[in-house]
Length: 181
Image 1: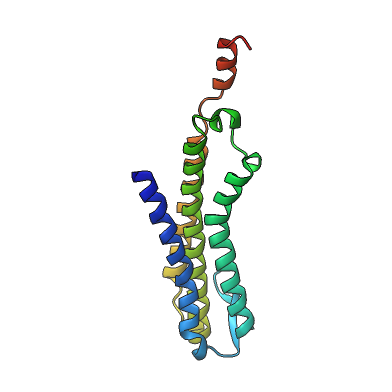
Image 2 (image 1 turned 135 degrees about the vertical axis):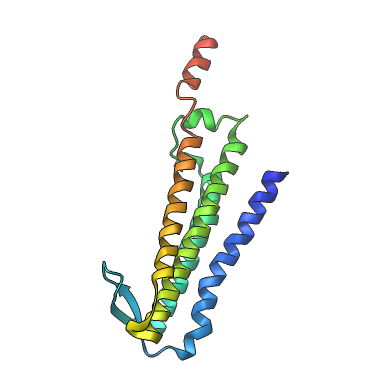
């Protein structure tokens, strides 16, 4: 029951995390000039622009597709097509007695990555808005730090997922030997 509540909470957080960057962009859309900062060099200095409408459509589409695609789409795909799942000892983890637990665990991890992806877009959109409206006076340092934190968190989630399925390397073989297979 607690894991179902956690999954539902993550789903609601993902929906909100997708709405946040869209809201940030639409809230200031009328105040933006015709050209919006869309790219940064390696020193985190704005170095390219694109049209306001193109930028808005691109950012909204990427936020929705990547946020929901990662969070909800991957869960749908692994349940519908488990053969697409690439984990060590897949036969062990997808055996009937472990299948639901395994798929639910992967789904929760992917929801977290979807949330992080959407928040990453929130940071990028806010940095672009700041740079567009305030030029070289824009202080985007907190946003770039936030981006780094999101990257570290996403790495931690991926590592947790890897370690979750690391064990039981010979489990299938030893079960087969015990059964005389």
